Image 1 (cartoon, rainbow, N blue to C red):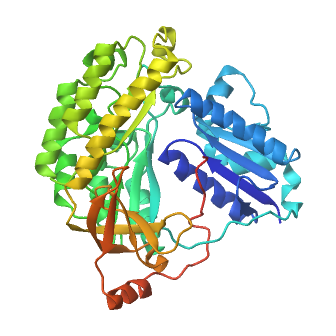
Image 2: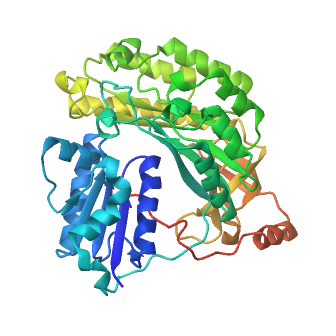
Image 3: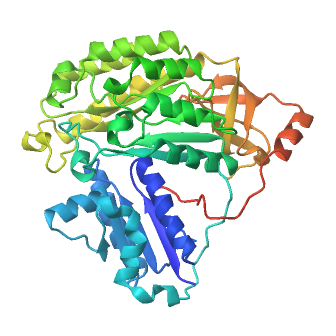
Length: 456
């Protein structure tokens, strides 16, 4: 039996697409193994959002080629697209697949090496099969046309497309039937979902309602969305349906208006703060998470201080903070990267300290309350410590049996951890625990959902 290993860098859209590619290999008879193990085929779903992602994508191709020099190493994703567009190659990669052909990776690999199905390699470690998971990513949209000054994604995912709503709901039903409790709705520019790009009628707000109404779907979480794509209807949707998680990742990028204009972001800091105010008025427990770039070209110390104050004012829950790095073909690439590297790290650490504190303050609001936690697994290699998230994205750890994984259980939040999560106590009797464990669906051992990890 031939062996395939797949890995993912970057966004949740990539995660979803890697799993669909893996299903193609599994259905054809491939054994799936860990990316570090010997394999006949390696697939890298690459990312190009930062220079570090580019570097990591190329490193993984070289690593796979070293692990088995005779293997087919296929790279797809945004870094692959940038390389194809530039007419370049990637050391170690034998097949480069464009983004618009990503779902044809299996066919491309087989065309490159038609006798692969006759191979009978023995993997170092076969991935354990599983019939359900705690959370599943559901891609509903592709493509972006915003052309922000720092981002190359519009060049690598060029066409706005919405999946037909019935196809999306049908997939949500299959996810729920597998025992998965939480569906994460994602897209490259998910707020652009709608009739004009192929939905068949519904906009994003209506689609979320239809997914949330699927029997056995306990939670629907929306992935990253542009602030300007939050409509009144979408706010009403979050305020009205109990299955929609009160958590919005509103990509911001800077807390200074001059830098936002330079980035070609179509809003101001006041617009953003007013949006957050309206969300908190109508969805009181909503968590606001975001992305912030430090040291964008032309960012002065004063502009950075404005971002620090903005982060305090908004009081984000969790934030991805990262230093600016030039991306090919973007407007910012033509500007002088004028903030020294050591100063970039100073600014990143300063901003991270601010958002870490606002995260701890957010969690502290819920100390003493009992909240539903979706159990996602156990902490480290220790026994009896489980981890999971509340609907508003508070990370919680508490003592309990690992058999509760995949269940939503009540946990009293007792204290705030140093990283902004919470320690808690399981609020169930022994009899209730046994009942929860008994309700866990039995694995179906099919290929609908495959355990594929992200590249570290």
